[in-house]
Length: 291
Image (cartoon, rainbow, N blue to C red; front, side, top):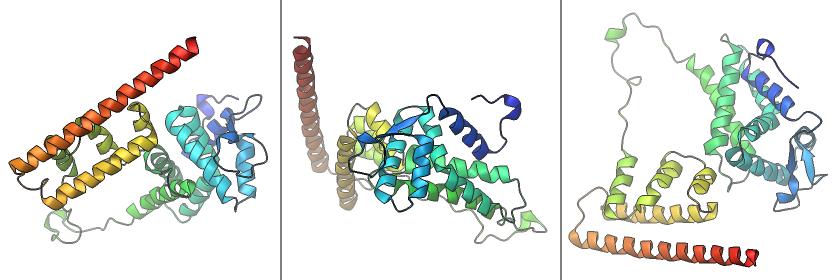
């Protein structure tokens, strides 16, 4: 199936539907291998083309386990396995996204294509970085992000009040507020004090401050998702302890500096030891495979 530039849909959601149809048409529709699921999701086939899978989920709205398993796999693939799985994830959600667009466009005096675009942007942002695969109902979190994005666009059109002289509007509740706090500076100080190891600074900023998805960051750093999640959790505890002790917001004593430096050196030795053990194990497995 092909679509020329002259008849490509103007609506973002219609374009997504067209791209999904092209990706899943015969003779080789994109399919999901359901044997990777951790539980018996009750799906009728071990490998299902995405249109058939979407139809099955729509016919079984109470198949919560299946929906969660399918969407965890779709989100993981969209984050790690290339743009075609991003299109696949959007296509699987299109019935809900199109329903949101129809509801939000009721009585809307702007361009409906703008609502479509905002809904899709909200969905893609959550798909890329926001949805947490460790929590239940990941599909619901994606849909909520999409709905909020479209709703926010509608609300924006109601926020502007006409005034006679903008230069003489009294300051009040509409005056922009100064941002409070700079957590990135606290993270930088945590690195300086040895609370946070330098190689963990960017992953910590990406996941905790940037709220990016953990899966691509773990892959880029050569660790498992579980290992990175545990590492970040330990960093959370150390930063919380340092904040409680005033180390990140005040002056650290020489004794505190020495203690933190010693702990950082101990973590470095443990990490180096684990890395060396992993290299030895990989070498042993390679030698056994070659024998």
